[in-house]
Image (cartoon, rainbow, N blue to C red; front, side, top):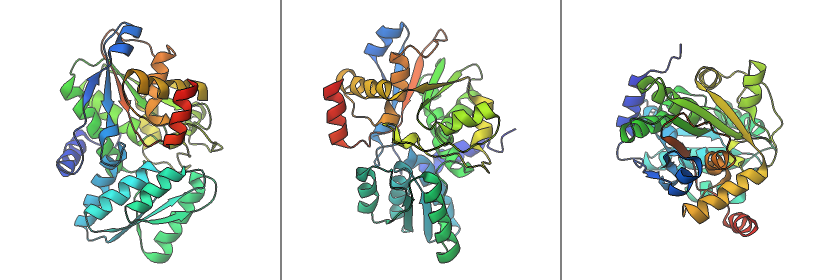
Length: 321
């Protein structure tokens, strides 16, 4: 039994009111025609920081601010760091963000532009995590995990509430899967409201830590590799407390995609949906284009998690696909 409750998710929504966007759920005629079932896109791309991460970071920092915390730190592949910096600035709190050298430059610059202290350390999310822990130990920062934290998970879970309120008969949810904060939160809220809904996690072949951990039956280390879905990189933590259990309990299927498939999803989003999305935001569309999602006889909802792609990379992908 998860320590997360649906009441936690509704309280998170109250904290987020006026601080994050209520994002649109829009139909995709092109994907609907392709699969023969209604397909809708939940556009977290319109959040002020360009990704869903603002929800969890804001919920966590709002609670820390109530406790008198004045300095927060995290380790991030980019989007959580940007969200933390935004939320901290809006609440008058100092923020530091530790990232590895694999994080794209555009995401590093976006965090710095929000006034956060940026620390680049090592070549993996795990090494960035160690740098964040040093700031907690040596300089008194409060740590806000990127995913394995009930406050963060509850914030991401508000997406599930919004989807089921807008589309009560949704039959399948397709959600990017990395550390599990987004997938675990959305799947938890959705299955609490509609237990029959199918939940599919999507990740990349290159370094899918949660998929490897689910296969092993316990959290395991996986080599972090460069990928178009860079936001899905990094480990889940060998001492994972919450998201591994949620993913194991709630994932009806997990799909892995190669780099060519992710690129096709990015190009499809641009050409057919008129959306600029990053690799992690495209994986749900990619999985549908590759016919990797079993239709459960009703509407399919794809969570489009983020838009923060380097535009030079985006132009190359669209040109080549």
